[in-house]
Image 1 (cartoon, rainbow over the protein chains, first blue to last red):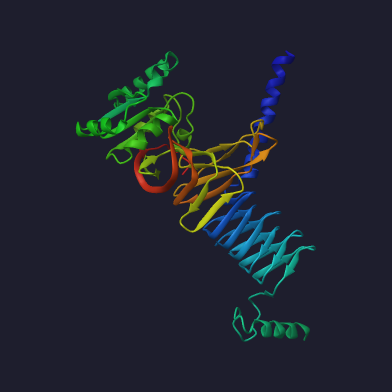
Image 2: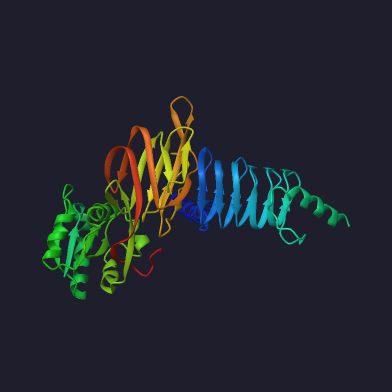
Length: 158
Length: 254
């Protein structure tokens, strides 16, 4: 009796666990995954979500969500619909909607995002510009960007 | 007119009862037809072409994933409708197509719900289920835009219809499943890293949906597509849209 019961219990408990792990690991909306110890070089573009766990060099583009995991390294200009960064990015980041920098994030480059969330501990070296402030000039002009940043600072102080 | 292509393994005693009940159901539905038996070394294309000349409109493959792959890899260009009656183990594609395994598949066949399926194209031949490149020092170029490499060896699996099952290592009790999406081929890259003196350990896989990709290597690498094994140094893989007219079930996954 003991031997006949125990495997049944194991089987019942195993199946839902496996299903939950599978769905956690590979959600349906994830379309492109750059795994750890994989190197990508070139114009890396995708129409779906991108998850980066390895290294990418060149340029990254997605119209949807970009997630840069802890330990991942991107040496490229990044354009995305929305983004969560927990790894290292060397290059300019342009995000249409929300950009989230976690405490482990390290960004060396200019950031342009509509909504920016920065957790304590995140490291940023570069200019931050956000559409929504009307200062009379169009953003993105390289020669005038420092002047514009100064103007924004003056407005904020006022 | 229906023509049924039976795989060779269906001669085994254990499948006889399933075959019998399937044939009875097909007769009841009025869709019974000529039965041809495939052997391991038979190319299905000339057989199907002959049957189409004799008036066959629907070719029904009876067997498992490898039967479907073996037939469709050669005859994807044939001008006919394909059906599938899955019997026995190793039937993962049937689930994707929404066809139940066993005699219940006859119900799906009789309803004739048709869909155009995409197939993969590799070095001048088609593959339906899966293409597997065994571990080697590979370089993968996607859509002529970006290049993917690994520090050491790498294994590539390209899925069209068949889901990709993987484990972290040999002793891992948990199996992970990723279902391919329609409209694109899905490439799963698994780099291997050295573990100890002789062993290798599989890393977490990378997933890249693509329409065209090229795998190259300095040394020849082994490619397995729908059960056929070849050695290559350069492989070009493409997606051929809407190549196969296939009868599918309502519960299909695309």
